[in-house]
Length: 338
Ligand code: SAH
Ligand code: AVI
Image 1 (cartoon, protein in one colour):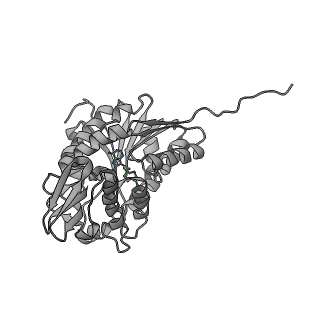
Image 2 (cartoon, protein in one colour):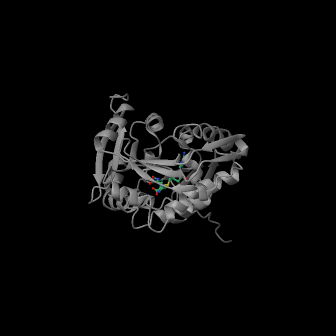
Image 3 (cartoon, protein in one colour):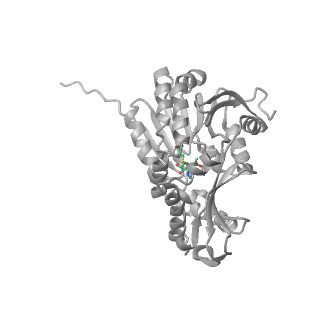
């Protein structure tokens, strides 16, 4: 009789959907309604990340002007082994994981160190998350992948506990949150961390205006297409009638807030209907419609923000040009704010 040996194919991929259409509607529609009444008028950046938006963002990461991804990759190439040794992580959690392209550097290092057991990517963009979860599971045969289709501002409690965890938040996506929401998210991340866990955060650094503005107004026009796609999505999903020809793409460096303000300026006064929100938005000539901010950081400032939520900076690395930083943080020994 032939020996019947079971091949090792455990159910290694689990996709947990925390964002169904009803949930997406109630949170996002509400936020959109109110943000269109703020000054300046704005819309939640989550609208930028439908499937097309995620693909466009991937193109952005390869633009000559968009140094962020290359700089962060350079740091990871140099430091991934050290991060693996310092953290000894069994689980790598990644917030806003997207394609998880750079993340393979961390996964490789943790696998080489012999500690990696599980990868937990969290993203709102379901199609991209599914594809990257499959690719990672195929590449790392011994690693379980528990992907969470969710909002990192609302669903951190779903991140599985246990083992030593490294929570990574790469790409300076933290900069897409305004300061109050950033503080809330950092506090929620701090509250999630157990003793022995670590937080790895990528932040883009303050630099001269010309390089920043070029990074968000590239000569090929990919960033403009990416941001305009946010309006296409809103027109489709919220049955709105934003007229692209009446809106000029005008990203600029706001030196007071130290963020890139990414959005449009109305070329003429006009009115926009948003049927799903049962609302009408009036834009005056020259009025701003913001789709996103992208804050830039300084070491002291981000260290203070971390300390305020009880996180303690344990390492700070930059690329050769000091454009971007990757930092490691853990819960402060007393567990509370310092
Ligand atoms: N981490 C990747 C991708 C950055 S793009 C990198 O460094 O290149 C930002 C990612 O965050 C996108 O994949 C987007 O879908 C996701 N994202 C944006 N807001 C989110 C939210 N509130 N919750 C979960 N994911 C979010
Ligand atoms: C995802 N995030 C960090 C990007 C950024 O640089 O703020 C989003 C982006 N918007 C326009 N270009 C890139």
